Amino acid sequence: MTDELFINTILLKGNEAKEKVQFSFSNLSLQQINWKPSRETWSIAQCLNHLVVSDSSYFSLFKDIIDGSYRMSFWANYSPFSKLFGKLMKDQLQEEVRRRLKAPKKFLPAVSEIDIEIIERYYKNLDEFSELIGKCRNIDLDKTIITSPAVSIVTYSLRDALQFLMQHEHRHINQAIRIKMNENFPKQ
Image 1 (tube, rainbow, N blue to C red):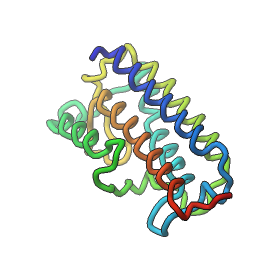
Image 2: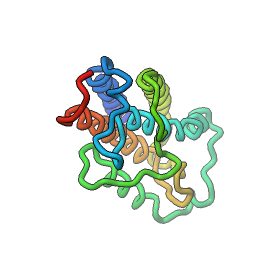
Image 3: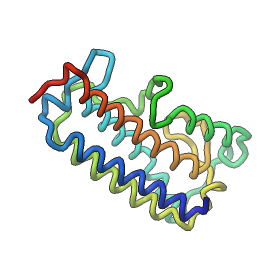
Image 4: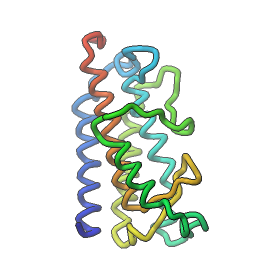
């Protein structure tokens, strides 16, 4: 797959994510978006908040790559594990959950009630994310190795990051849709 086609595919998946959120959650009440099936699970609002927090942690890195000021760290340049970490992240963060994972502390959503504006913040965040992805068209996606904002020893290619971040996007939107489909979900 060419880089142009890859970027276009990722952007299409971003549009699909936005459409799923608009279709599934745009008419929900504050009570509904904050409802949790159990104490151990997240609400719809927490799923969206988690995506805003985790996606935006990459924004400054992507901006540096786009404007040419990004310099790979020594570890990013020489880590023999970048391909392995990239494959692992893509395998672990599939859209359909094979295994529940614990989010890094840095990416945990707010624990208190989240205001109804989380949906608009999510849209704005996804728009910025998509804009940054679109500006990566002239970047060597395979040779640009980045370091995870969550775990400093984890490195992977920009191509792998874009792929698993969009998979991650859909993973949590699908999680939020499952919450809405719960038989105990509040009707109003």
